[in-house]
Image 1 (cartoon, rainbow over the protein chains, first blue to last red):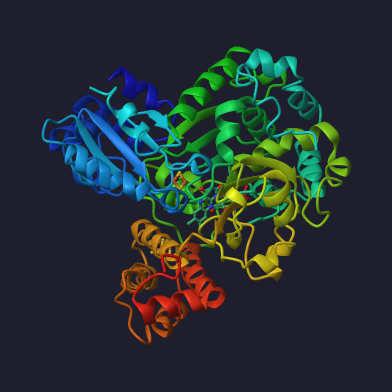
Image 2: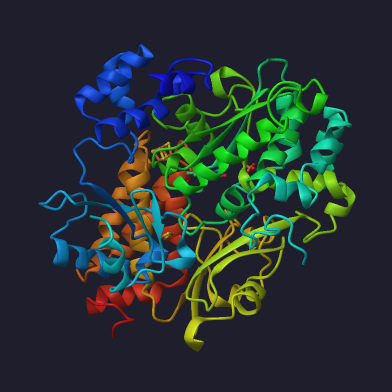
Length: 148
Length: 420
Ligand SMILES: Cc1cc2nc3c(=O)[nH]c(=O)nc-3n(C[C@H](O)[C@H](O)[C@H](O)COP(=O)(O)O)c2cc1C
Ligand code: SF4
Ligand code: FES
């Protein structure tokens, strides 16, 4: 709640605080469950339907539970020509991980991204908030194995 | 050329306030506070600075419109959404040189009499968020932000607003909707944000790189600034180069540097001694060019003359090993994913183009598919609410126009020329 108070100070009205509040709720619950959305709505005194309508517009708000670690791998043009699609295949082979899916053990979720601003070091991904670039068929697993 | 926008970014301390100040940082702010707001707007107008976010609108003129509007409060928003695929030029400023941006914003806000600013930062840059928030904190502590800045009586508050993964929010009216806590769909223009922007108030939206140019203009004066690069649209420019070159990266060069110089002198040429096939000069939304256009100057006036645009200055280089049908398909997949769905020609048309490109690419193309693509594209162009749909149509048309043999080959042989 204190966090939301701080957020509210930055905006001239309550509605303005909605995007950052959704991030706070997502962090607390891991994803935007019905409960999380209602909590956000209550904190800002907004109708739950409004809150849900906004939350579903943005790709980075999650509407189902996520694995312990979120892999956000870019396959846009610069990454594609440097072999990103092969990495998607390898994630499937190695972990049984499909785009939009989560591994059975709940360790990883995978989301395909549209350019994460690292095209000079393609292919690139974010794991949670860590950034990894210059990926190839070997180092991607060396990196991922560090995330338990 | 001496670097200004990327000055000192190789130094691990470059993001710290103490370092920035020791290198002369916030000197332009002190100078600006001794000038009248109108004088600053006059300088920016005279400098010829054009917006670096893609459209190239004259910055001084935009400021003039906003400052003439009698409504208060006014808002200043920095567009750090950097969503155009191929673009990573704002990122070094955000992560390595945040105080340059903050100084630029304070000067701009003073000129505009804006008391509140936001940096709309894409959700995909979590590290930049940490750096910016720390830098803002430092600036508050030193009295560069807050009430009564450096004893001048001027007040300006600044905060970071984190986006949540929607390319369309880079479009300035969608961005404003998003800051207001709404779905990021573009608004109809006019009215323009300079008159009716955030919370209905006059609002200036400028790109990161645009705002980072302001301290330089104040420091050296508009007359000196105009001597950098092409006099028709002067200043330093960040070119971010990706794809098949030896040394991809961000290069700060005078506006109007030729594609040839960028690719062959600064980026070390085509990787592995390969042969150039195609270049996208300004990010995925700008029309593709053939190698005979290499001597074109990379600026807002020269690229339109050869059928493309400067866009975000994101140069994407493709050698002979790249299948351009596949590139075009992937671009359309992007636009399909990012279309906000507000208008039918974009929502339906882009999806249809992606479908047709996908079947051509995967060997199921039919005779007449090229004409079909051209027809759909022509029905999108000029009929959409915002430039996203137009951009998608222009991309498809440019690929077909410039590389018809690749499309023909795919349809005829059910496979790719490159793999053949
Ligand atoms: C679909 C779309 C996406 C855009 N994305 C960005 C962006 O990521 N960053 C940016 O600065 N401008 C972007 N723009 C341009 C903005 O609408 C606006 O023109 C710009 O922020 C104005 O700043 P400037 O005058 O300093 O360039 C985009 C425009 C469109 C139509
Ligand atoms: S052109 Fe596309 S992105 Fe732009 S408003 Fe229409 S549907 Fe939305
Ligand atoms: S295309 Fe993958 S980071 Fe830009």
